[in-house]
Length: 271
Image (cartoon, rainbow, N blue to C red):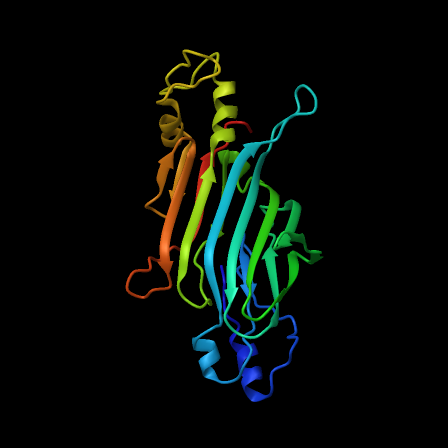
C-alpha cells in the first residue's frame, strides 16, 4: 500500500524546501504484510499534495508459494512465500530522498529481505518489525526499485490446519495514472508438492496421474477448488499453475477499480 504523507507536506508548505529531505514514517496496520513507500514532495503549498510529482508507471508483483525441503527424513515441511516486486517510477519534479519500509507481521516473519535501485543493491536497515530502504530520487529521472523477500507462514490456528497470506495492493499517493499493474500468485510448487504426496493415493476428486512427471490437465483446477479455500480480490485469471490480475491506468477516477487486499487461504494438508 502506498500513501502520501500529509504532515510532511504541511511542514514543507510552512518553510523552504531542502535539497535533501529527511526520512519520514507513518503508521500501518500491524496484521498485514505491507509495502509502503513515502514520497516527500518538493515545493510548497497544497498543490504538491494534490499533484505529487512521482508517477508509478509500472508495477509487477510476483508471489510464489512453496513448501520447505526437509533436510532429514521425518522432518516437517513449512510453507514459504518468495516475493519479487518491481516498481518503475518517474520523478517529474525536483530531486529528493525517499524512505520506504516494509512491515513484518508476526505470522509472516522474514527469512531474507533485499532491495535494489536501478540494479544497485541498497543497504537495508531493520528497526523493530520494519525493514527500511533509503532511496535518492533524482529530479526528472526514472528509477527502477526491486524488492525481494522470503517469508515464513506461521499457522494462525493450527487446529484448523489452514494457512494464509495477505498484502494490500491498492496504490495511492502517486501522480496518476499507474499505467500497468500486474499481480501474480504462482501456486505451481505448492501444487507439485501436493501431487507428489497424493501420487500413490490421489485425494478425493483429483484425477490420477497417467504419467508421473506430467499431472493431468484437470488436476490443477481441482486442486484450486479443493485446497485453495479463498482467493481475493475477484476478477483473477488462471494460466497454467498461476492466478493473476492486471489493471490499466489505475488512479483514473473514471475507470479505477477498488483493489483492496490480496488474500490467499489454503488447506494446510502438510501439517
